[in-house]
Image 1: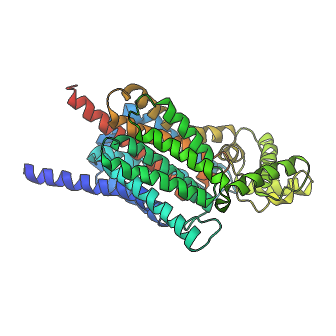
Image 2: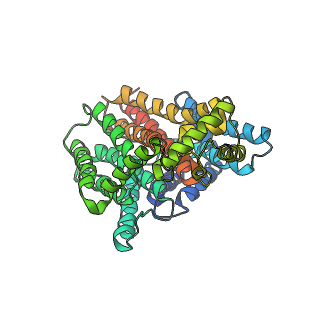
Image 3: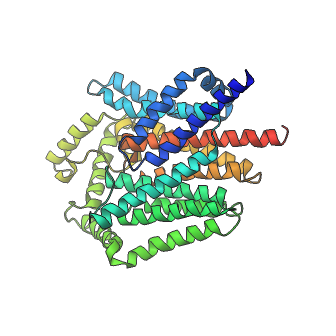
Length: 420
């Protein structure tokens, strides 16, 4: 009887571990990987409902504020759907699926897969994503290689995987295996350079600040050397004409100068600035709860007819800034919902880093990875609506919940080993 129970527990642990591996591994090299993993996590949590529920209740004091944040984001979207005649059911998909991504947290807490399953999945995802960009850019001569999705979203997710690979290297730095995520991090950065996404560079700077903040815990030379090499790589790319980095930076400066001198807004940066100008008008009209996307689009058309905006904004599906998008479509309340799904996980991981930094690398590397995910998505949202796509939204929620679960499992292991 005991042997059967052990075999059953091992099979559930192995199945959960496989899912943890597949999420980051398939995120960039397939169109369906993230969405499929989202459904499978949810279905498995229903199959193992008792274990999942018990695991969540056991850790509820530690996880409740993060779960509440995603729940609030979903409930606000549901309220908007019920009270806005022009709203469509599809508006609920992303916030609902992001909230139900808590099923991944439940499974990880219940079945306790090895941390290495996530680290190797992230490493494989970064390497696979970089190789796909190299193939499209160098082999197929595509100007903006981006796998099978929007190049900006692709570049952002690739950079996020590269940064989390640094966290994997932190944990594995004492052995030769640490060289593998190190290579993945550098390959990912190279892929981002070839991809041409400029907005994501802010994430690298903020990630560097996070790593410097905890440099007293990151012992050894591997991770600091990687960080220095990565920053040098990004800097050197500016001086290599074939990368197109200098051209895109200079074009961005020229776009800003032209816009503020009263010239054409028809440029990558100019369109963004004009969108934000229109967003300011929309927010002023409905500051508390915002307006549905359909209404916002109609108002933008009105502003164009009234001569308040350039018509370059009309084909744009969103406002190229997550905070602005949240304020336009949800007002102050919607902005709070967006901020909560960033701030609550950030505080969770910051608390783990503060309390556990001196107790070993198990919790530290996982919490560092979680913080890098949050910082990355905040940075991406400064010049892009990263939560616009289902893939980006689900990737964020699932990675946050997986890293939280693994953090709490590692904490339990420390307490057991300490006899607490």
